[in-house]
Length: 356
Image (cartoon, rainbow, N blue to C red):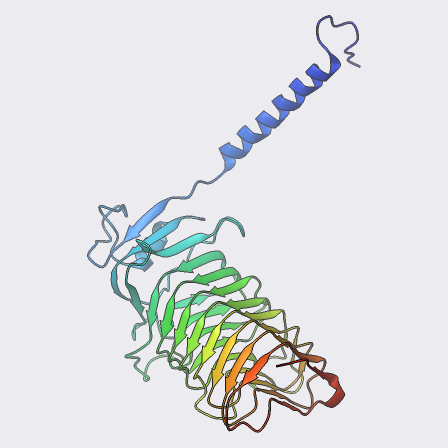
């Protein structure tokens, strides 16, 4: 055994400190050697896929650019219109804190993606995230679903997220899709870490369709969607039984969505056997010509608080008989020609108040 005793002019503390510093330095060097550094590529409608993807010599198509990228790389999408759906795999990010990024360049540039009506884009969906996808951010893009050819494909959706992990959609404009602006679903895995933040989601059939867990919709403008602004639950009787949890709807402006007085700006709906648990609807501004929030179906532990609801011709909140443990408090209700604020069919399973 080594001993520090008898070493003149050197204290035990200084030797231990030196050994510790050397060890930490070696570990840091090893980490830096193994770290993958992100590369940045550029794409432009006036570019060429034979280019090297630099800012001066950008690629022409997003799909080609994706084939040149590695985990955690950045793709700068330059101004213009891209008539393509994204069918090439997007490389996954390195981890939850280091995403692969597809973003408008420069920030605020007008970048428009439109779905195509030819193979392999048979779903007419711009982005289709699958269970193998994780740690990816889409930022600052406009997804335009107008001009859809209904004879092709089985759907028309801006972004479909199925069983993916840590997908962020930020500062984007998603409009005129005949199924949904954004939809989340389960595959063999449930989703996790899905964040929709600061987006405009307008003039679709459904704005956001949530049929999976761990989804946050925050600070979005959701308006003019024909069916409803946000649907949460399992709407298909042919789909497998779902248990959805931890959906957060926070700080959004949700207005003028439902064309029917009975649908709701936000709707929670499940078929028999499906259950949604732990939905939080907080700090939203909701303006409706019909029903504000519709809790219709098997929903447990739903919280509705600190929202401002302006509504006409129907209730601010409807709670179905089969809903359990709904909390409705600290909301501001106002409007005209309304029958009442809360239509509670669940009795003492719902806690109402105080509201204003």
